[in-house]
Image (cartoon, rainbow, N blue to C red):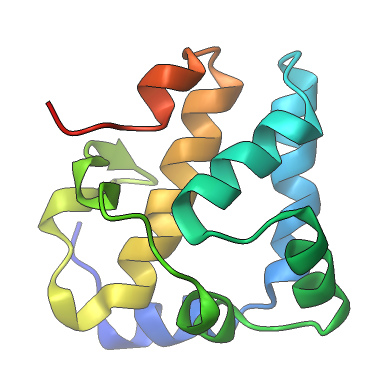
Length: 124
């Protein structure tokens, strides 16, 4: 599937705090912890648990969330299909959408029981 400008805008304008509980439910249902979820989010964005909570309290959009984030230099190693989109094929012009899919992919891998050292990618 191809990302469109409309789809990018829809995702960019979603409130992060409205999606966060779904991440929590997804990982907890599969026996993972909120701490592990926070570890994954912090690896990708550099936001610790306190910063994450303040962003949720401020009701920031994904656009603001990712504008304030310092994306991990190895994020480009996150590849594969999530929600029907091949992450590495998402065009640069849809950067927010790609970053959202990075986060979705990491949460998905956590929920599927992947080892943390595999999720938190390192250059080889």
